[in-house]
Image (cartoon, rainbow, N blue to C red; front, side):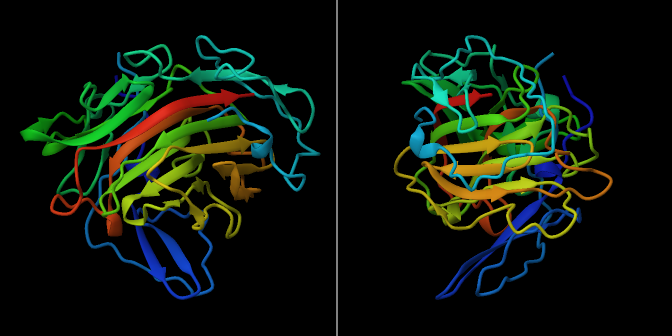
Length: 367
């Protein structure tokens, strides 16, 4: 079924990226083509280069919908400099997934720095032969209007084993070119394309406020432009504090194949002033292997990790009339997306190799 309100284009944004390389800096600017104001990214020593839109984009268009690493070890634990809340009283709310247990992945219980142990609330090791629909819903353009890629080559999201499958211990999300063009059913207007892709989320099945989330995944071995992958958290109530980005979004791992050695996370919300910590451009990865991506979310801070290393910590400061910990004080769902790129990383059938698959070894969450 179609959920309302509709999720705007790629979280309310049609985002283009521009990168500038100098001897001293690799600099990233995220341009919010939708015109919405959001927390801005830091500029490196070399300065930032702007970019203007040369094409209209339909990316992540539509709403999330239903159809009607390793365990966090000592090396993952945040340092003593991690901010903790001293004035806010909060309650962690969780919709526990089937089969959840104290420890995730069969490992030992994990101690919290603040005392006690983390309790496993969600765990999928993908050891079966098909997607566990008690935990995941497959995103479909037909029911949600969700689309990625440039307008010339949009990707239609479908529930097909060619795009979403489980085998050999991994979840496989694949973008591919079909044998011939077809009509993609879209509640916001059918369109013709030859590309399909895969995405899953826990929308309506599992959500959680605060806690620890971890995904171990391997990206497509592609260094040409044209692919984008996101491991992210999205509010169960997407408009509780207003339209995107007002209600928040946590992209705790995001990748652009043109810059295949980088993990570029992004925390979206309306900030009271420029927030230099919503993204990072120096978190390097090796796409030839599986990497582990984590986010630890508290009432006062969001810390993102890659392979046990801190990528960024953001102590967000929301614009009025919101007060902290808003908008990050509500249940979020987990989403995993294989997409076609836009902007300077736009998909080009003459350059971008498809099919391309993101493999997910496991997804775990604790509270």
